[in-house]
Every structure is written in C-alpha cells, then in structure tokens.
Image (cartoon, rainbow, N blue to C red):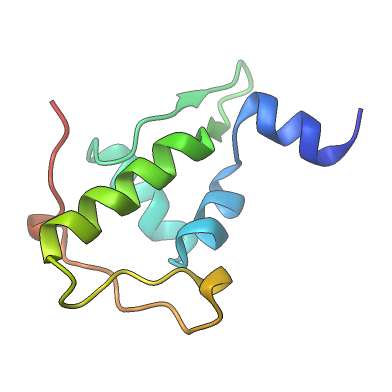
Length: 93
C-alpha cells in the first residue's frame, strides 16, 4: 500500500495537517483540543484528521473573513497568513 493511499484512508497526521493548513504543529494541536478541528485518535493515541475536515475548516475561515485577510495555504505558492486568534475561529456545533 502506498503512503498516499494509506494516508487518505486513515487521515492526515498532526504534522501533515499542519503542512496542509500552513500553520504550526502546536496550532493544530491547540485547535483540536479546543474543538475547532475534528479528527480522531488511533489506538496508539495519535491524532488523525480527514482532509475533507481540514478543507471544510479552511472554507469556514474564508467565508467568515469575506475575502479580507484570506487564510492562505503553503501549497497555494504563497507564505501562510498569520493564524487567527482562537476567539475569531468559528466553533462547530
């Protein structure tokens, strides 16, 4: 099984999620602990995040900013924008 197939089936690790979002590892952990990102833990205690969940989170940030202060991923070819403060991140029900 290739790494991409394995990763897509199980979700991204915390460090892969951080790269995907263009934020630090500790930011992903904090957002997960605060309930902004929803993933699951493996039997060994590692966090996994479905790519769709991360993309939905980014979309919710973009919708909330209405185009001003757009959240930029590193894969877009630009440097990542500063992370919003946790008070500005919408909570999911």
